[in-house]
Structures are given as C-alpha cells and as structure tokens.
Image (tube, rainbow, N blue to C red):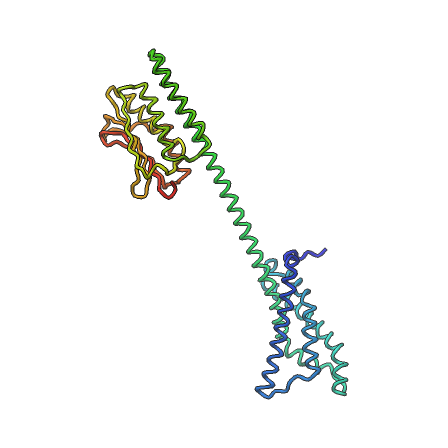
Length: 374
C-alpha cells in the first residue's frame, strides 16, 4: 500500500480541508469572473460568450475534482522528504500532466459544443492556443495548492511538536518536584534522629548523675515534644507560632538539665506569627546553641530566640552567649545545620540563607527567608 506522509492529519481535519478547497476555487472563480466584467464594463473588452463561460465553469469543476489528487501529490512529495530542486521539478511535471488531463477533458466536452454554437468546425489549435497562453497561470494555481498543503502540514507539525515539548517539560518539572520533595523528606528524617540522639544523651547524663526527678520531668516534656512532632511530621511547612512552640518545649526540656546555667529569651515580631516556614527548621539551631553554648561553658548562658521582618525578609535567629571573638572560627556548623541549609536550598534555591557568626558577645545562627515565599 502506498504510504502518504501526514495523510492521517488531512483525514483528521477532512471537513476543514473540504471547506478550504471549496472556498479556494469559489473565490478564484469569482475573481476571474470579476476581472472579465471589469474589462468589459470599464475598458470595452468583449465579454465572454456562452462557450467561453462554459469553458471557465468546466475548468474550475475539473480543477475542483483534481484537487484531492494535487493534495496527495503535495503530501507524498513535500519539502521534508526531498531536495528543493527535486521538489519543484517533480511538481512541475505532475502539474503539467494534470493540466494535460484537464485540457483533454475540455477538448472532449467543449469541442462539440463550440462547433454547435459557432456553426462551424472548431480546430484543436483554437482551444490549445488560449490554453497555452494561460499555462503559467494554471501552474501557479497548482503550486499554490501544493504550497498551502505544505504550509498547513508544517503548522500542524509545529503545533504538535510544541505540544509534545510542553508535555515533556511538564513531566520533567513534575519529576524534578518529586525528586526535590524526596530529598527534602530525606533531609528532614536525618534531622529528627539527630535531635532524638541529643535528647537521649541529655537524659542519660541526668540518670547517671542520679537526677531522677529532673530526668522524669525531662522525659515528660520530651513526650510532649514528640507528640507535637508526630502530629506535624507530614507537614512540610508550619507557622512560626507552631515552630516556636516546639522550640520553647525543647529549651524548657534543656533547662531542666542545666537549671540556673541556662536562661531563655524570646523576641518574636507579631507580624511574623502567621508566616510559614519549613517544619523543624529552628530545632537544629536551638540544639547547636545548647551544645556549643551551655555545654561548653561553666558560666550562665543565655539562649535568645529572635524572629523579625526586615527588608522584605523573614529573619529567624537563635543566639547563645559565647567567649569567642572574631579571630576564632565559629563552631557548630555540623550535620544539623548542613541539613537545614540543604532543605532551604531545595525550597528557596539561593533566595534563602543560613549564616553562623559571632558578634563577640553572642554566637548567632540566622535564617533569612524572602517574604514572598513565606
């Protein structure tokens, strides 16, 4: 079976193609008829007689019937599958063959009618000469149809390609989103065991020091903290208020252990309470403040939680008093903070930052998130 490229496309839009063909030849016929009227009315040219009118009508009817063949030729021999010179040469040959067929039909039908109308024999050359004089115009009509078919196929192919690209791009974005979500969940799951390990070490330390009442109180608060954590574990984002509630529980848990050596302060901007941040974002910062502040000093240590808005950024800072100065490296950027930084990168790319620095009085871990994504 002869393969016709893009034939299914034409078949799919059959009604549109038929309507286009009818409109094309109707419009062309009206234009030819209009030029004859203008030439006759304004410039005194002889108007077409009955035979000439029948000739034009027959010609357009034959062309209309031959148009499906021209469309198939245009589909089979198109600019995608052959060189431009070959494309033009083959269509010039096919167009000439169709014109010859059309002339033979005219000759068979019109010659007897013309002889009857003119009451004399009509020679073949009388019909051939006018036909040859308009040969170039007929070829232009043929190539116009071929060109429109190729343009139509090209536009449909371009549209299909764009649709495929958009679908592929959407699938890629969905895959990237799923991958990013999986990475975020993995990072979050790394943070939680890290927190539990630190809490376990604190409990073990109290038990070894025979601080059983403190250990019981600590275990009770740890249970409350774990309950909230389990309730929120499926939420990637929670409000600042909910995150601060967990931080308060955690720090109160640590105050049981360190008693008078640890003091906590909170400075939360009212407009920040309802804003959302990634779940378990501040927990590793609080753990670091305890580990590298309270644990490493015999002096009283203040843990400060400050959340405020500045320059269209939501700033979340946890500080601890320290003896470090600017000439010493700041300790504490371990697995916990590294995972927080990685999660921020997944959610906000480079729009959010995590900094760890000292101002000679405090060591400060600060997260900055743009407000438009909070």
